[in-house]
Image (cartoon, rainbow, N blue to C red; front, top):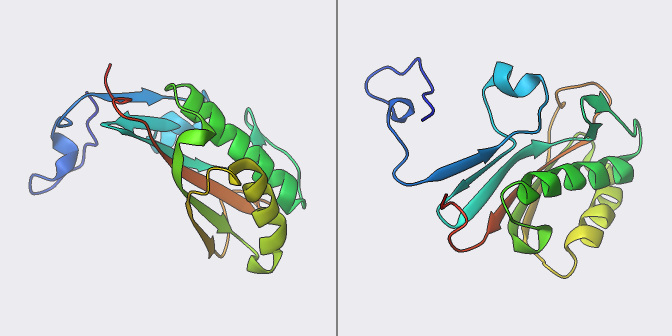
Length: 150
């Protein structure tokens, strides 16, 4: 299974997961460099890494917080789908935004995607995201009993 390497003092990076873990990758070049998966299913949950407004490896929708949020949520939905979950299974979202004054644009896109689901949600202002011009990054956690089983 995965090993995080570089552990000192017997940290958890050297242990096998307690149960089955499934992973999907988006195919971007930065996943293996940084060492992460697009989404991980463990137990009854799916954890989707932060998604931004990229199509493949290309940043899209510069300057448009609403469109960037929609694209980020689409990318999160793709990660969920790769493990057999959907946006309807989402129980928590986190939105990292570079300008909290644009919360309404971001919130509108979030509401359109999750209005009936109504997950627990947090919006946090951050100084910057990985690429200049990115305005929002969205993480999701989904719940579906048994989804982590192989």
